[in-house]
Length: 341
Image (cartoon, rainbow, N blue to C red; front, side):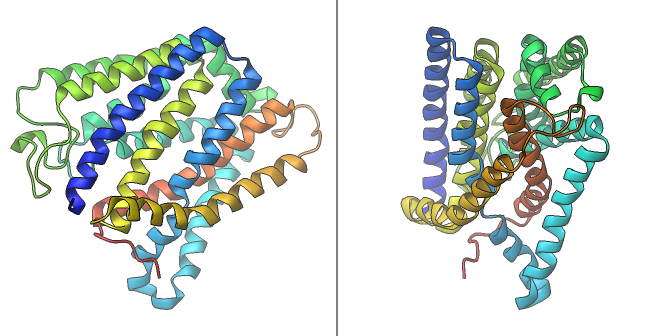
């Protein structure tokens, strides 16, 4: 199959597989009622296997964006900018943790929304808000105690949040989700909010047609709603982040590695993602091993479970800011192939 069609088919098959995995997670959580330790293990494994790899080719994105301007010296400005953005995020967590958490949540909404809305759609605002807000607002509103505990694990004791406040913020977010979904569903213009092309032109463009329609949108949002309502927040986040968001992003990038052959594209992506994924995992293990027992009240204090949550989510936040900037730039340049040598 040609490059465009393999991506179109992969996108549809991904949704079917993601819905199946989501359903399995819902049933399993209902039958087993996983402990907090089991939830943490699922989170760690999922992030290691799928979450980290989806951002582990950022150096290739940086090469594509920076090499035309800086030539062979591109790694120097790229590393300065990338590590600088990550350092700024870490500094925010240390200096003003509540603001850092709020900033991270805003970045997450934008990044999830951008990542789950195909880049060629001209109608991006509504699906970006819908896809980005639902995974945060829904668990905040229906599992406010559990989500508050996760948030407070990232904050020093003196900056802890109240579950009523978290539930209120989540409720306002869900109001926005409901309004946005309603607007999308009653819009009478043909085509999709999700595909390349746009609903304005019937979802057709040079790639040969729409990947999405409103029925697909409803099925996806419906399944994700069940996931975030019926499963614990850590399990729900892991399934969404890994099986929906990250895998979609990896498929998009695999297309850029080989637009003609699907398996070659996926294989090339995994090969290039492996080194930085392993390096990041080793760094996280080292941070945990040398974390010790910090003094109570400091940003690093807490149980082993809290420290692991902090490493995962603060680490993800530090990677999200530069990764999001690169992804945003890439989506607007849309290279047919990524440079790998």
